[in-house]
Image 1 (cartoon, rainbow, N blue to C red):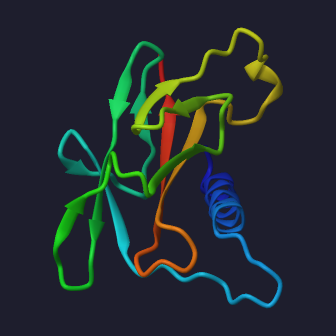
Image 2 (cartoon, rainbow, N blue to C red; image 1 turned 180 degrees about the horizontal axis):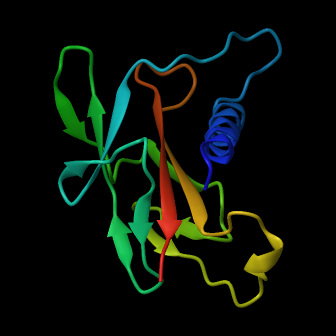
Image 3 (cartoon, one colour; image 1 turned 120 degrees about the vertical axis):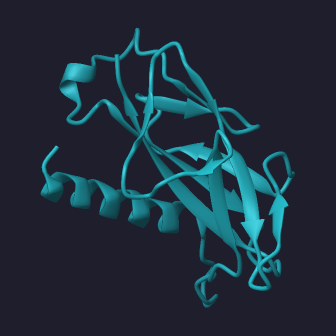
Length: 144
């Protein structure tokens, strides 16, 4: 994929993330993250510059760590305050406990969708009004 397409895709994902998962009520200020979410795969931090490769028969378990400004990390993977969303359910899906798999595309013609092999998962922590709020986006590429 050319860099221009990747930039547009990343921008689109970022805008969707901010608009979908940080809702605003009338007169309410935009919610600002107060904590950083670090996503680990096989105990290694995921790189935001490159998509994570995933095969159709593979499952990838995400580990989500909340990083506070004082530098302490807490595993929040299974927390009731942690939510997982697929922005591209035609390519990758994610369970409520953070396990990513390739989507079943029997009812979907991937040739009709540009960049159908790319996927994006959003992880959020906390709700508006709570002292600890964060979000992260992870890109995936489906490979054979």
